[in-house]
Amino acid sequence: MKKLIFKWVFFIMIGALIGYGYYYFIGCRTGSCPLTSNPYISTGYGALFGLILGWDARLFKKNQEKEQG
Image (cartoon, rainbow, N blue to C red; front, side, top):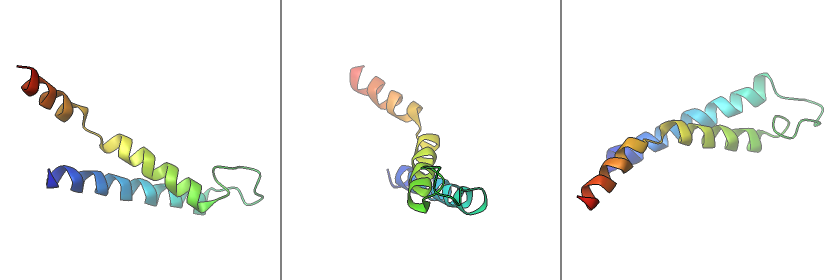
């Protein structure tokens, strides 16, 4: 379980760094773009995207199969 938590935290941190990098290098300076004009929003979306990429659905499917049979 610790390995799984570490993996999630790793992917969340990488996603957050990419989201902030997107804000910093590509972001909208005028404020007309709600996603890229705020560093907190772009970092949050990046972290969420990182969590989605790090989510291992096979693990949960295996656990459900063990419980059923």
